[in-house]
Image (cartoon, rainbow, N blue to C red):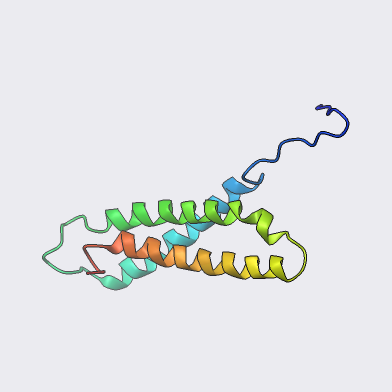
Length: 114
């Protein structure tokens, strides 16, 4: 049990208690999205390496997890009451979608995304 001196607030952390869960969910979403694109690609271009699927299957979920971390860090901004909090919520969701998109681009760089 933690006790605090009266008048002094405890230090707030940068991330929430749910950061691991958010990162895992974002990584799973990224893996599902990139898996769909890789399965729909078929054999791919013969000029690509034999194991071209490994890079996007590893890189995209990791980058999506980092995107989930960034979304978690903006949590305090989304809690601001009024229109500012709603604006930060909308910007956070747009940033999350843009992060997923950029993760897929970086994962597919050199193969399907030339």
